[in-house]
Amino acid sequence: MLNFSAVEQVLVLNASYEPLNVCSVRRAHVLVFKGKAEVLERLERPLRSSTDTYPWPHVIRLVTYVRVPRTVQRKISRRALFARDGWRCVYCGTSGGRLTLDHVVPRSRGGDSVWENVVTSCAPCNLRKGNRTLEEAKMRLHAPPRPPAPVLFIRLAAPRIPSGWQPYLTGFSSATASATA
Ligand SMILES: [Zn+2]
Image: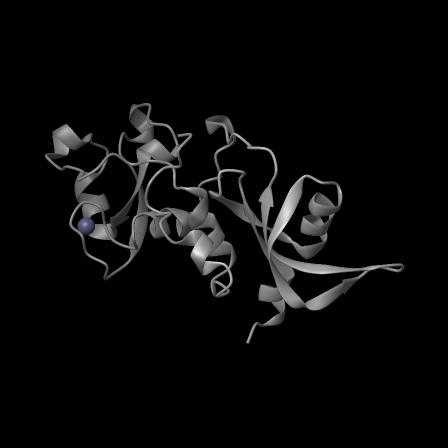
């Protein structure tokens, strides 16, 4: 059974079928009504306006490919960062204890608060690294940090993914950058 909020959310795919984001039913309906999107999945319930009845959109696909520029990358939040890194410290791999946000190149050394320079670190590793670079601290990353793919934000926006969305999300890892990154 779908709960109310899940029903109210619509999965938006790019023209390439890459998951883009989640929007409201109202917003999705406007996109479809204007011919900017097509309905791929609908729910068995009517969407009523004052004069007409429409299919209830559940998954829609944009008609025109939308390029997601790097400059409008999503804001960094701890929740999204920790989710990107699998809720583990990138240095020692622990998933226990308190997780923190670490700047790989410390801010005091000119490091920016961008996805490519922030990682999930346990408190002890963060303390050990302190104000040093990786080389100075003799610590290493298994992989360079990247901006998360849109699917990560979709999973965060909809903690319980409706089953009707699943086929459109499988194969899109939340840990890797999107094709445009
Ligand atoms: Zn650690």
